[in-house]
Image (tube, rainbow, N blue to C red):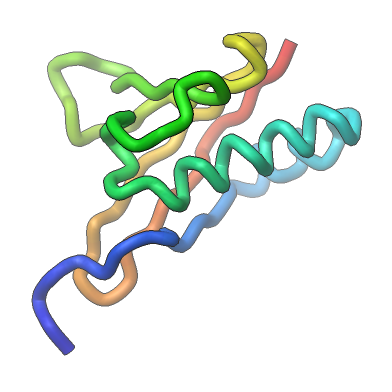
Amino acid sequence: MTDELTGPPWATDWTKSASEYRDSLPTTVKAQIIDAVTELKCSRHPYRDDHLDTAKVSIEPVRSTQPRGAHLLYFDHGRGWLRYVFTPRTADPQIVVETLFWQ
């Protein structure tokens, strides 16, 4: 075992409220969410959009004063977003989706 972060794909977990809301959405929206989260999971770093398909998703920090804090991932041309945090543990780095919204 090394002290370096493992690379993508990153493990992902959802809070109960976010997963329940995701499951209540139409099938086409759920497919867009899966595409967006897959894009995020496969990125080199979950807090930078330098290797994301920006036609599908974009990310930004919730607070500019906390660049390593919670971030927003926009999908469906900005009609939906999810708030997530990245826990950069050495053994098991993980993305946790805390909130999901789609209009």
